[in-house]
Length: 51
Image 1: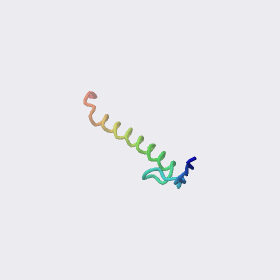
Image 2 (image 1 turned 90 degrees about the horizontal axis):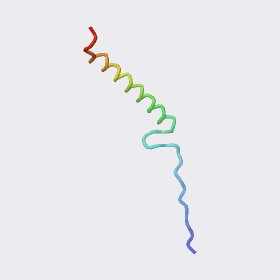
Image 3 (image 1 turned 120 degrees about the vertical axis):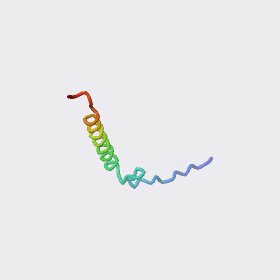
Image 4 (image 1 turned 30 degrees about the vertical axis):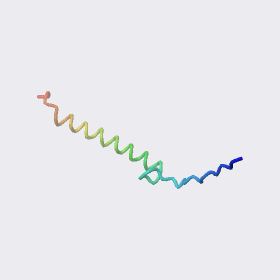
């Protein structure tokens, strides 16, 4: 009978380049808000239909 050895999970809270899940969520919110603002600015600058 083979004995399965489980390797300990490295659960230091890091997710890729982010130090924690909260940092990941915050960066997604900031990125989304920045994209919305940038799209609004482009909409205002490139709207040639207004007199």
